[in-house]
Image (cartoon, rainbow, N blue to C red):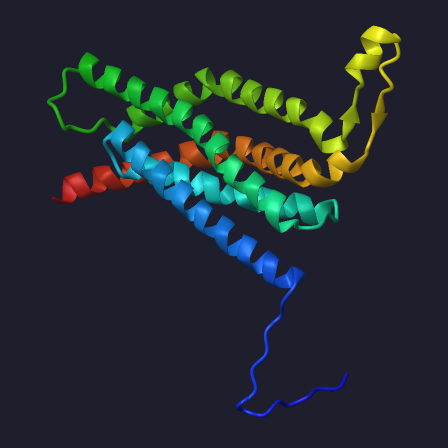
Length: 227
């Protein structure tokens, strides 16, 4: 391998396709950060808390790990435009599962506080909170899994490029079904990104989110006793 040393007053840059890819990557990275900021802001208003939105945001970041693991496992390329669009879309989808789980868990905690007639602002004991987390996870297990399954199954035809000619189906009774084509090259990376990330994030939502919520609640109890 030969290396060339350029004079100090000489500068160079890549142009053409590489330059366009860098521009697209910068734009989509800023779009992702803006989307995450808006999601965090809306969640803070919804929960009237900062800890729960941060827990949900953690699950979003961990879901990106599923995307990269899936791409590595199946040796798929990282297409800057469509893969990044899939990551941005994934951030909005993953939020729903975390909101459904944490909102119901907090509802159970509030009901238990009213049942025990605790003063406003008081925290439940760790044992009661753990039971509420287990009950919330059990009750929301089916909705979270069904949401993930329906989304993944709906994206599989787009991911594999399933083509059906409906005009020929009704005029000639021949749907001309085939898999592949130009559309799978364009839409395939986006679909696979959402499939990998959502599959990984579903298990994270059911395990990491309740565990993190329990840890945060324990810290709140400790701070309350300390103060």
